[in-house]
Length: 337
Ligand code: ISE
Image (cartoon, rainbow, N blue to C red; front, side):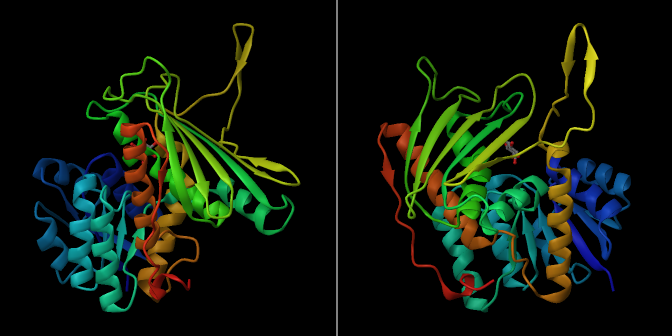
């Protein structure tokens, strides 16, 4: 029988997940689209052929005709809705971040530990991106030698109106926090955050530059610039002792004109990471069907680690100091994959 999915949140990501489920996810059906706005839920449900709509996320999670939940509502709802799904033992694909508060992530971890299994696959989809996969393979096959540094650049065209310099750390950078930690197979021990001179830290989309240290002595840097103006641009380079490997964004064409050759940038992350989202969602459906958690997907523990470093990053930005990280002991549930 097909996995009956409810999508909670019909904004930009909820709409994208609804499209993936309805067009590109064998073995899954879009059962319910839930949003605080009934009109928005109805529009997405009609576009994607969902069986029903709802405006109550908690009631949606409990419905008997729902096997699994995709949470794509605002960041502050992620942890409470994940907890509600765990309470009724339904698997969740939750958009990142798990929470903007490490204490809330710990509550999700505690709930999973109490049930003795994982329910939450976290939407750090970059782990599924083919270019990051090749990067990881180059490291594990030994061709790069020991990994020593990772450089990351993360640029959006324009920050949403509610974005502050702090959200560059709590909402955008968690992607790099997670994927660099995954790539290097290490945990962070400290973070420092810098801003270019003359930048107003409270301003929408103010750029930040972060330096992280790992427990294996590696260095990671991350530039987040949410007002880059020219396009959505994510770059990464992993440096090993024997070589380095850089990400290539999938670009299908190159244009020539006006005495120039040029390639297009997407206007946001969805085209750049379309394949990553598709593969991530397939892994989720496989998890729901078989009970086997994907070996590369992020879980609640990874969400906690990303939020912990984001919280420390906010403090580093506020104080101008390097902040040490104190990770709690990892429950055995998350040790084996
Ligand atoms: C957004 O939530 C994402 O997940 C995007 O990948 C990221 O580029 C953007 O900065 C976030 O706001």
